[in-house]
Image 1 (tube, rainbow, N blue to C red):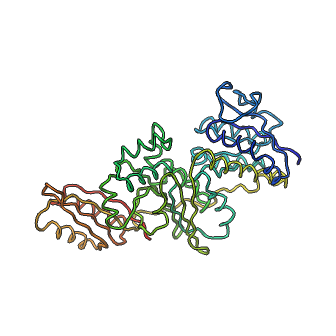
Image 2: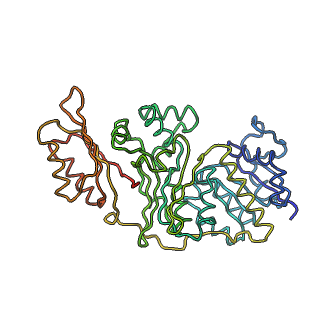
Image 3: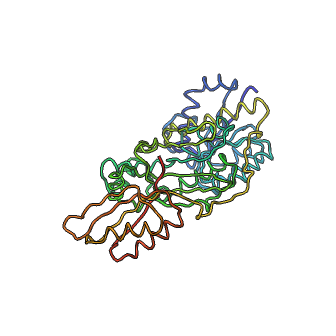
Length: 428
């Protein structure tokens, strides 16, 4: 195969990075693939808009059909974002026997299985490494490097925006609103940060990871999701007093055929490798039955890291084309979905209470936990200056989620308890 031609859908931040790499490193990329790489067309909204990278204006088009229906284009790279249009475009590209690369996590989390089936039917590749954790090669690792291992659990910081916010709150004492404003000012958070701070972005990535690690058709509705909007400086302060760091993490774990997938603010022991992952960086910790524990760490977004993942997928597709094996790698979930029931979920829990600072308060709280069969691992108590109120922070030993939540509801009804909240605690 002497040459491949590429059609690019989208010329935003990542698209710019891809064009830059194809231009700057063309000779090296062609040496690695043994094939000439030609960028044929780029879909844009406005052909006259200033660009951050030089490109022949004749390559630009506002008509997607000049790419999807072009018989000379072998590979379509989708970097538009959104779901409806990219879904239609990718479907059309595959039916026209074009291989596809996408960085679209929203699309792959919601429609990935259908598109992968279409890719296999048409003997085309569909690669999507850049859809999770930017420049970290986690998807390729799950399907290649770790393919021989049995993955027991994955826990990851997969959203750079929330990690940046929590890092600022933890290290600089910023309240949530100011940390969010800082993230927006630096471009780490959108003007509407809902998808990030409510945990939806991380949940979509956990859906994709679960498909590959466990071959289970997890849907977004199957993921238990809690964001960081209710995390306060006080939560972080008392977690630190007890030796923990709060991070928004995605967790996927399989036990006895049942899967539990969740995204939630979680207390990590200060010695946990993920506890030191700060700012906009991402990291995914994988527990394998044979290999043991492995961590993948790096920048989770941005022009450079995401573009590298896209171009790495491009190299894989070109090599598959040269070997005549496109579509053979398509990985589809084969097992049935069996969500783990709440009565089988166990964890440690962090409880923070505002209580009346009076005799008997402490014993009434500890007695309740004791009566319900939940033992306490750590406890910190501090009076609130100028008020007849005390703050109590507790970390329990491992307990059933159902039993703990029943106990927590009883705790809130105690006459001495003024306010109560809890978070999950990850083991070290």
